[in-house]
Image 1 (spheres, rainbow, N blue to C red):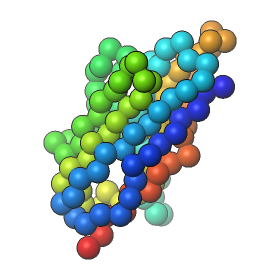
Image 2 (image 1 turned 135 degrees about the vertical axis):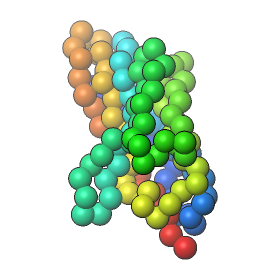
Image 3 (image 1 turned 90 degrees about the vertical axis):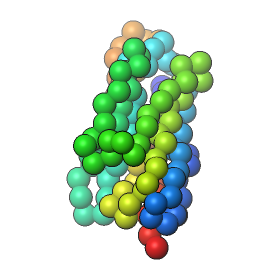
Length: 120
């Protein structure tokens, strides 16, 4: 089994910054891709950003230039630095990972989410 635990969510004003963390643990041989999705009230879950094992990154157009994803391979942890936050960024942020497990299988795992609220 693999667990993803997010942290760092909170309430802040527009223009503020926040850093989310997602720590992966369990039967992990390699994390192929890990990233962040978000789901705002009444909307579908959408991709925010991801990073691959070769450090390639991709971002949603709505966060380019404001958000930065990075990873610490030694800690199996991914970070999402969010700057210039807007009310539209309000959502539950979920960590998602594609993992090659100790059981020699490639599996998708999700965290439980962390709430980010941007409001004045």
